[in-house]
Amino acid sequence: MVAVPERALQELRAKAGGGYQPRLFILSAPSGTGKDAVLARLRERMPDVRVVVTCTTRSRRPEEVDGVHYQFVSEADFLAMRSRGDLLEDVQYAGHYYGVPAGPVRDAIARGQDVILKIEVRGGSIVKLQVPGTILVFLAPPSVEELQRRLEQAQRERGVSSTADFDNRLAQAQRELACIPGYDYLIVNHPGRLDDAVAQFETIILAERLRVNATPVRV
Image (cartoon, rainbow, N blue to C red; front, side, top):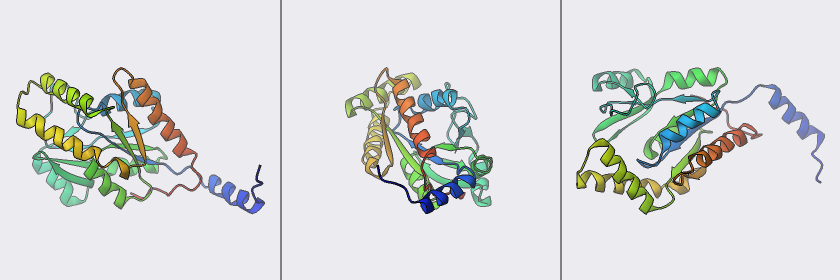
């Protein structure tokens, strides 16, 4: 076993004594991969982690709950938030605006809470540039065939039968899958194994909490 120099130990103890440095995690996933289910189960297992909900101007779907899946706002309100600088990032996707409210993220970090943001790939890269130390986690299906099946199922549940809509979503998902090499962690969500995916995400969070030289999150 290699001995750790006493000076190094003293520096580590000094850092540890300075208080816990909260982590900022971003979860990205193609449509239909199960990110909402993963986050819902993770909230049950790790209630101390704050999941900050994204704002969007798109219409709420029947199965969605305002403030849980998204914060549904008007386009005028969204643009006003952006002009005031109240958004950590914002993008336009499929004709709608999406953005992360900065206030809840700052408040949670100030309280010492780890934060998770559910953001698509482009928005995640923006936050990573703005906030060094952000940890990127990608949730992927086990195969393209399984992704197609889930997208088809999602269309049926929404009562959508448009071939063009399906093709666009599949193409977008494949572009997102191509971005996996830029992420820090990859979780594969296999059918019927949701708890495995949640446990892997929990393990990532616990491991990052033990990181010695974590970059402080400045939002």
